[in-house]
Image (cartoon, rainbow, N blue to C red; front, side, top):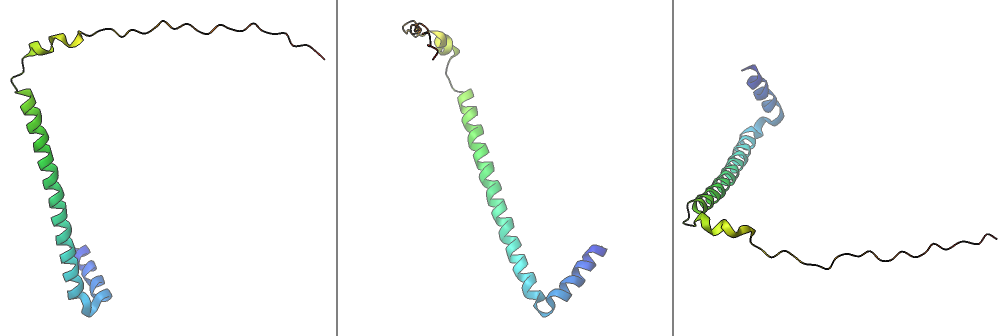
Length: 96
C-alpha cells in the first residue's frame, strides 16, 4: 500500500495539471496493449486447434495398417563400384 502512495505522490509532482491527460493516455495505451495481446493469444489458440484437428483426423482416418506393410519394399540403389585412381610412382628429387 505504501508503494502505491509513493507512486501517486511522484506522479503528482512530475505531471501536476497534466496528470488526467497522462493517465488517460496511459489507460488507452494499456487497453490497446491488452487487446493486441488477446488477439495474439486467440491466434495461437486457433492454430493449436487447427493442428490438433488435423492430427486427430489423420489418426482416426480409415487408412488400414496393411497399406503400410510394404514400406520397406524398394529397389536397392545400384551404382558402379568405387575404384580409387591409380597412385603415381614417387619420383626422386635430385639434390643440387
